[in-house]
Image (cartoon, rainbow, N blue to C red; front, side, top):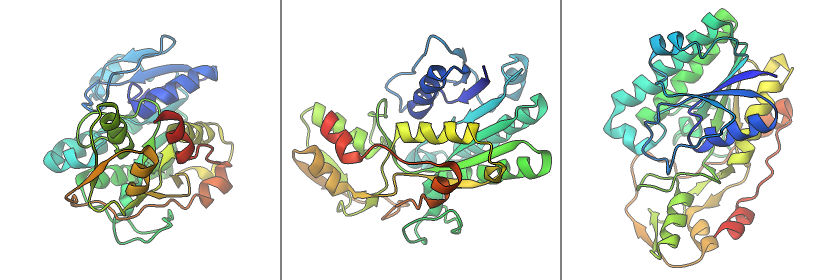
Length: 301
């Protein structure tokens, strides 16, 4: 049985990953300081061990011995919403960049074999045209994308300098079970579901023509486990898109949901279109997305 750590393992993506890892027989430790304001709740699996510690607190992480005898780390913990990081950029950089450096250094010191890093497609920004490929230049438009994409470089450096095996993932608009529903900065599908449940009009930012590659959380979980178990050494230090490989406009989503909608002013620093080129991850990790957005909405609306 492999011993693994999931940072941010009580949140949306992390808790889904924890459940699947336990289902597959892993011994799971979770590091989560429960600081996220987006969560409806902090999820617990009775078969996992939990450590309420910040990823920036190296002394406590060391003294707790959470990294002892660990084979793999899935690093998801972050300040994870674009708009709040515009209000508090220093917190985003401290948690996302310095916190990632702490986790990588502990992997190095404790001999952890491999780390899978969860990054963001927002690193592609505005100047790159869809479909978005991993070899395109970064175009970071906010503190969130700057701090997350800089951590990709840290991960690659820890592999090339010190041999800590790392794999970088850029997620595209993840949705699904346990997705955040609270606040104006929750993901759009979560906002629409909350508004519909409350009998409210759905609110669309801008004119609704902006498109996103919506990726189901189970496919993100699948990608993480594929990277953790792959014997292919060519994936190490590499960057991979994790997406559905198809996109939908926000207006299309509202129409799929059904009901009334209204338009709100556009927000600064957000891309018009996203669409993942998933040929690299499909070729090197045999990743195939399995959940179609329209099917999921029809089953959950």
